[in-house]
Length: 397
Image 1 (cartoon, one colour):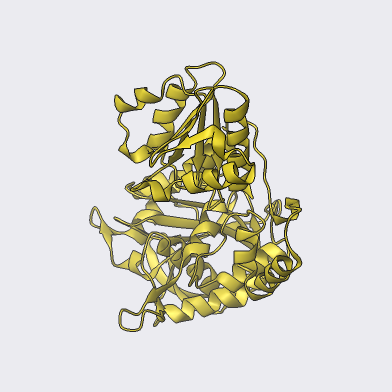
Image 2 (cartoon, helix red, strand yellow):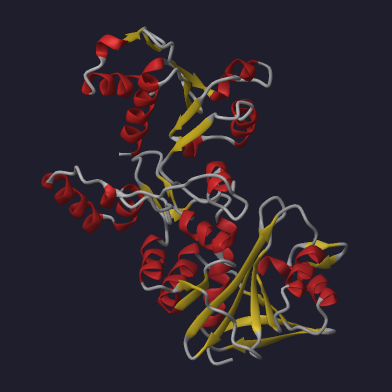
């Protein structure tokens, strides 16, 4: 629907007045990958074929000089982009693939002409894409007109198409929401927690949940060197898990993360560290000991190593129906959970039973620490000033 709308509008503009337009994709290896064929179909549908000259690479109006060309932005440099100066319209189809570099090149060139317009049509993938930041974030262009459309705004759908859409909704609600409603992808194919995250959104458990005033907030860590260090902030009250915050970063020393915890302003109850905090050493001390020095008034607990990843995954699945997430502050963490997926078996091409270790694993591992620590009685090593003891942390603690 979006592509047909812009294609029809562009042909109308070329008929009404002299218009120079460039149709853009991030990568265009051949003219077949462009919207040229769609524009040709619109010309035929409007019954104006005789008014246009269509060559292998361009479309021109025979009388008023209108011209449409097709380009891949990845091929442009700071010098070659100047060839688009003076164009009236730049239409970027499939703009979800636009790179930040390409957008930075295009915008100053096109807007040099006061009356020029940039059109972007795309299917949302995730909120971190450059086009989303440009047009739909808090820092988006204020003068932009952004219209969110879905199949519900399309009056031309046949009954057969509507039946197919309903079948897709029943078969895969995430794909239905993405393809037909224009929503971001919440989970990827093969996601470990696809069902759990879908249910959390459908039951409005990703919301504006805030920490209970006066109640301690525990932090749950996965420690990274080259990988991320990921931290979840959570409370538990009457079987309800309030996931109120999330932070992760890489390349910083431990004091950076403890300062982040302090800066959040929560009354911190316990710091839960993974098993390797008692093994890895910083400046001659284990991470657990270093954490004790940096946060001397807060109990530090080290969770014993999981025998299998599947134990942590099952613990997460058990608590997820009772988890409420602060939509804004845990957005990055939820995105990582939705992208945490199973590895692919190289022999069969199907998903294996083992999760893939990638940039999403750290947030997922930290959440597994949360689930194991709060949902179960778990024997842990309690790091108290000056000595190590063994204690248990039960659900009602």
